[in-house]
Image 1 (cartoon, one colour):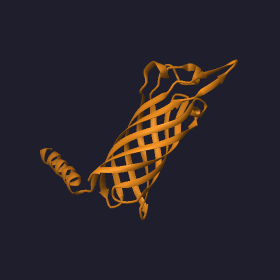
Image 2 (image 1 turned 45 degrees about the vertical axis):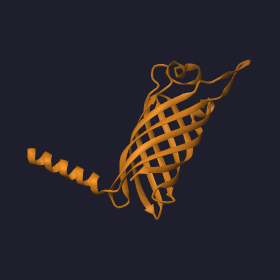
Image 3 (image 1 turned 30 degrees about the vertical axis):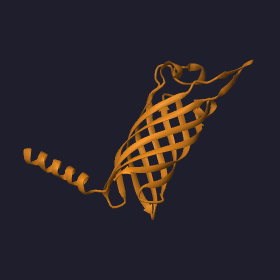
Image 4 (image 1 turned 45 degrees about the horizontal axis):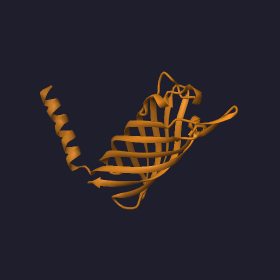
Length: 178
């Protein structure tokens, strides 16, 4: 058993040491879709991930992000009211595969945590009062200009009970450490 643990540790260490790896940060702007489109005007996203090339043209790694969905004015009978902001902290496992020269496809799968407390717990806008956390997924397409700079289009969705806080975004990613 001790030999197995040592072998697994050595394999993991060598993959991390000799594989191409990098700390990446990104920023994106998007428009809401799903249920969020009725109460949100725009989505701003910042995220960071650490990539490890597992084999040639395949990269995996952890990713964290912050999604700020700006509340919009909503018409209710005889009045206009401001919808609350919907902010989420996302934690995910991410993967990318290069399917053509400089073109990558990937996905993030994880969990989104509601990040603005009581303002988000508002049944009037369709956000469940009991739960503002949910399953997060984000399929994406990416074009790499260089080893350090890429542009990305993504669909981002957090499923909360019967509510879908989603958006379509476009952004830039920069590799800080390689």
